[in-house]
Image (cartoon, rainbow, N blue to C red; front, side, top):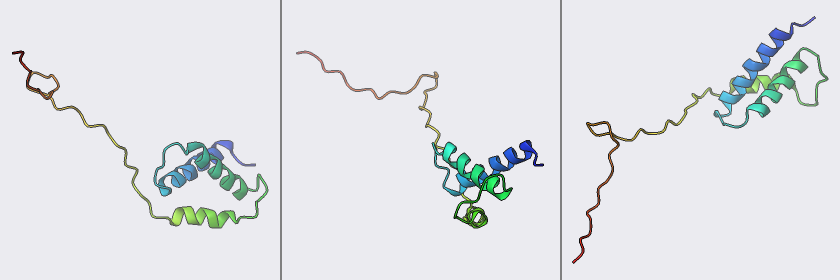
Length: 96
């Protein structure tokens, strides 16, 4: 009998590897999870293998060069000494 917690943890690890190796693309978490779930469940024989060779798919995911996930952080507005955000001052037009 296979431990459900062990399988879920393995699915989580494979899904993360897929995420990292695919360039940390946001919004693909469900696709990554489902792919990882299929890989792991087929590995344990809990679902029938599809025509694709699962082991070669796992090796391909692991073989890809690991990349660091870089998140973009918004730049903070520069502040003056008083703690207020600096704004560009434009000269006022005077009425003649």
